[in-house]
Length: 262
Image 1 (cartoon, rainbow, N blue to C red):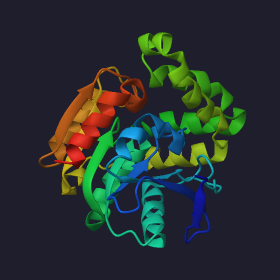
Image 2 (image 1 turned 135 degrees about the vertical axis):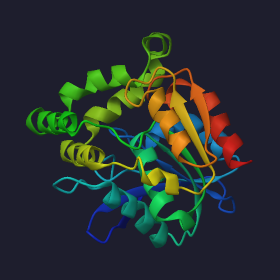
Image 3 (image 1 turned 120 degrees about the vertical axis):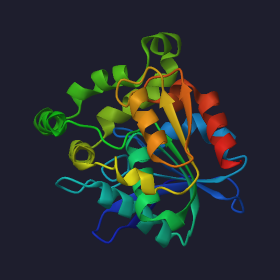
Image 4 (image 1 turned 90 degrees about the vertical axis):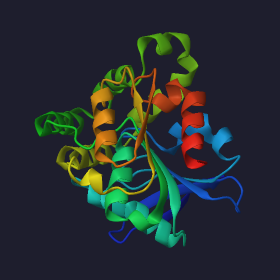
């Protein structure tokens, strides 16, 4: 199925697609920084057995638009709400990884009525210091995505997995250099300015946090902090680096299904 589009109130085109039975409950997936909706391919066979899966490309990523300037978590969250409104979808189950998990937190805080159950994977409520994000934004604007590509992939996967499963990494490795540099920088600004460490406690939807025991980007203490902040949240740690859904595809799919079907 090819990608479809909606246009947000500020004129940005957001790409999306559905997979699975039309009569099944909807599971919304939100991608990480530097990837697109295809990052979820390892889970699609499992999840479409029980859900109508709605995927979209973050603003600045994949086939979605990449407006000039810095973005905000508020804006990225509003993109989701405008997508759901345009599709006449009232409530969803939600799974987001990294940046997608930050948007999941925003939704749980600001739009709790739209969520049934939530999975926040390899993510954090705060990723400082801001100076590090400013440096990354400056690098991307000056030199494009190429300098980031190899370094990011090395942080996304453990060395053992990269050596044992090189074909699993190929589609992910192609996503980062294909990402619009302005869109990437815009989303970096959203992460730079985000701090939901106190407000995460407002999330009421049943929440599962998935962490990677070897994740250098959002290490285990970030996952544990989220679980402490969100009442009743549960934690599953997988033996993976940052893209746990690619490194541990079956275990990740099963963890999400176990939570959503509970």
